[in-house]
Image (cartoon, rainbow, N blue to C red; front, side, top):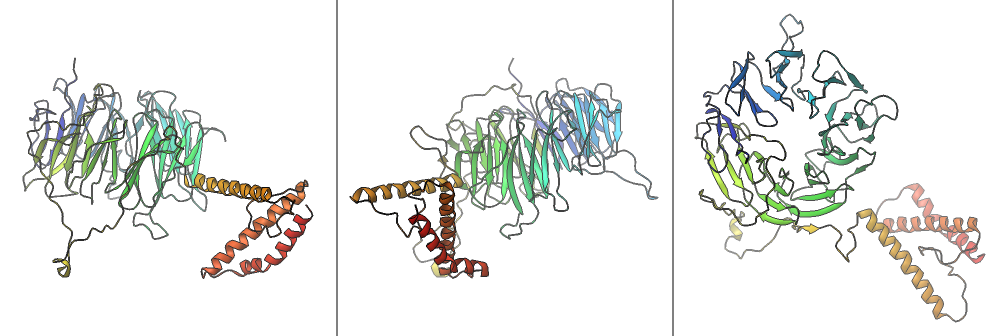
Length: 585
């Protein structure tokens, strides 16, 4: 039996309603439209079979499959809703309030049994950030951050804390996806000169100095984002500072770290300086894509060794989205960019299409892996609100613009479990559409009056970098990092020096003594047979090389320190000492 088409849920000043997905796009009868502006929040269950929403008076749950109202809870102030992974529990959150006399407020985080409708447990949760408990996918464990420690509950028994993970001031944690063994990543911010760190643990082994699976510390971090891959083998950590002390970026400073559950960790070397806009894992868990660097931004796919696999070059982009099956990647520039999208086949690294979704504030892949939703929503933008459904080949299949006096607040797909929709062969030919295509207006650059009657010269602010395959091709060398290239150049210089020395020796019939002025040679051309003497020669050459570098800096006009000038004055004595040692060889 073929799976049903995912529904679209639309929330705005026109009310809350559902729309049938492609190819029909008619209003769905699954959910009768709720008119009015009182709907603050809605959510689907992970498998898309249950739907909950708040209408300003009650929180209701319906079954999407048989359209039956299951439960209704009297929660007029609920602003957050979330189902547990197996639809056992509905979590609701209302803003925390205290009474005027200063007494503690009532619990505002409720956990309801979806089957019976009874309240399993109520907690006080003051902050909206990270309000929802985290469940494992089989709901065996559930975790909450309480007073800087993580409390774990088992089998939805919220009356008994099964385990606690206590470190100094845990700021955030993320449970791993997938089956057992369960893992948890925790972030502890630095204080009093100590670095911040992220640690990975396997549940429930939290005690002891060697309990952590992996640990990564860093100084430049005011906040972090932790991203598990689907197989729970590694975490990507985006460490951010609020202020870039160098003054190079308005966005602060970001670094990207890779931490694996086998204990390996690394800093991901990004070839271009600037902010990290987005990082996303492929569903295969073997690759991730980063969008980074001052505009025009670069986008690069890395493997689990943090080596670049494919570089998409530069362009106006700040987001990346893998399709549910992981075979298509969309690079997009939303927000303050013009909405240009690049749709790539990531198996063959071929560009499929380059549609433009102007003024978009929201993007989402359809669970079928073929269709894309883009929307312009309030309050980010209060004009030209609406949404579009695209095929990944660039065709607009459906478009809806809200009236000028109305607003669109939220739109999203009905979720489906992985594997419900099979992956289809990628097509490069644009699919037919009844919606007339809108050609984006060609933006012409401003020309001052004095230049308007003169011929146009093609000048660019930035040189665009083309896409580049970074995988080692048969017969080609593997692409090297900056450090590796530097080491390679050193090795080649030493090799050249040796060959040059051999060439000089072969030209001379009579044996010649070792060159006396060997301060600038990079490698010793003869050895004494005495390791101590060889070591002294090596150290002397190192010092003389440093002096040469200081003299070069002085020649460029750089002001040298007193100790650096003293080093230069010792050059003659060092040369004499080196000459004596080499003559004694």
